[in-house]
Amino acid sequence: MVRVFSKLRRLFAPRPQKTPATPVRSPQHNLFEAAAFYVSGCAEDDQAQMDEAVTWVSPEALSFGVNELACRAVIALARERDESPQTVARSLLGLPAA
Image (cartoon, rainbow, N blue to C red; front, top):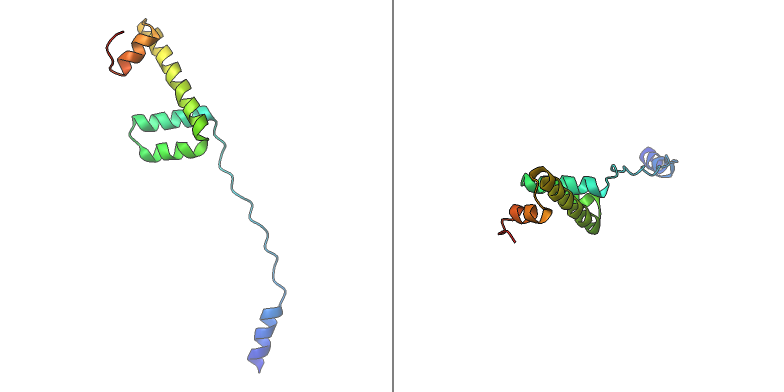
């Protein structure tokens, strides 16, 4: 009989209110950070790094960032080599000179 009352007390006892957990927000990354992280992962053949970068921004934003990074890299190399961006781009891709 005592067991029944103790079970009933536990059943009907006031329960502490559960507070909703505050969602943990990951740091916000901009598309240029994502692009740099993605491209460096490609260069280092690090699939995990590339997969992580893909989660940082939308696919469209990542594509734009990678394109912008490629343009800036070709321009920087062209200035450094004193060549045209087209010559540098073709050279990087292993294409014959135009």
